[in-house]
Length: 249
Image 1 (cartoon, rainbow, N blue to C red):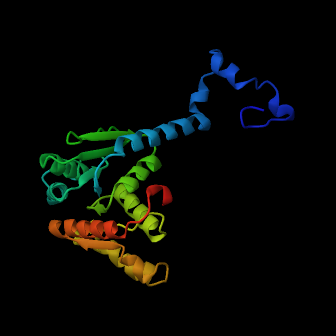
Image 2 (image 1 turned 30 degrees about the horizontal axis):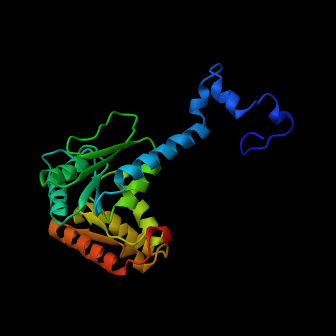
Image 3 (image 1 turned 90 degrees about the vertical axis):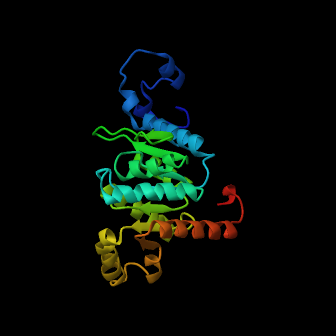
């Protein structure tokens, strides 16, 4: 036996004991790059994330392109959304990077709200923006995604690229399949998202790949006030319908 693993025949030859391997400093160090070791790293990311975010007040995740310049209308809209969410009593969670993420964090920070950034290790340099009050850097996308879903009461997607689309469809899938409690998913910027919405309606719904009610999971808006109103109404509805404890979910 090697812990919970049973080895027989040739498989057990030369394996030794777990204690012996732990205490022996000789031998190769490539074990730190093996999948079992990665499991511990993954576990640590969940532990750190849950620990840091456990007492965060109700929050809304804002997504959008890291390439959005600070003088663009989209940056200004994200900043206004971050500020408006703060005034409505929500913390703001972003990916912690530049562009739209920075703008939303900045709007929350300038209104003295809680500004959260969940960063990700990338092959190109990207650090948390200066407007993040509480920041966590992740190695693994799936651990980071779990934090977004678990600690957000709504997703707001401004114009963005693959990363924004990834978060958008992840949320849509989880809500559609009832893996998570239904919460609003808002597309801000009707002109930008029009082609996607048309494709969902004409191609997916038109060919029976989704149900008519699935399109109702999405809200499209060009108004900051309307976005906040959608989030507030959903939060009030969720509070009225809430039953049981998290252990029962």
